[in-house]
Length: 251
Image (cartoon, rainbow, N blue to C red; front, side, top):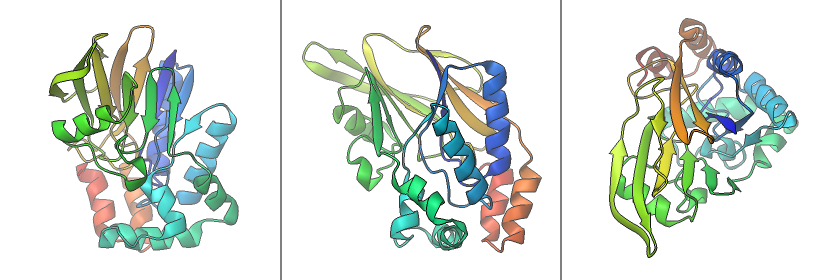
């Protein structure tokens, strides 16, 4: 099974379409979206509708914190994120909101867990940015592989798993674009997939992940897209200028 992993689209239509074109060219068996369909970007309606069509065609989609904030508001968000969320809520129809509200917090298949943030208290949206935070997430599930988003920064964490359970030091690996990373059968792994719509690792190209179950490997793909079009829409919508500028910088 070849699974495309997309996450943190954040209303960026141009980035999503470029990634979906790349996924089609590479060839996969299905798509899993790890959440945050909306927030920040200027095309929330179009992106929700595109993801909903993917789900109708068999994709899995998980709820992210920005998706949840459509119902709860952006009270705990940064000023820029809260401003964008208030604007986004005003753009979405009841049908858009219902789609986001009904998404599950996590999805598990066999030895693979899909979740937006850490598997430890996913409803609280903890970030996984360090080995300690990854270890906490790995301790919260029996899944051999966990795929998440939320940080917008690609990473792979792994730890030995023996008869007595998880043991040893958690290893952190920063993947290179388009280079397959083999997964060890004697370790448990947590793969953080970078963002489609708002990368923050210094590379402005959209990011998506490919999990090849037969080959037991993960590849982080990077895809150029029409950044200028996406950031111009953000400015035209009157959203905070930083949300546009960071797309160009990948920060």
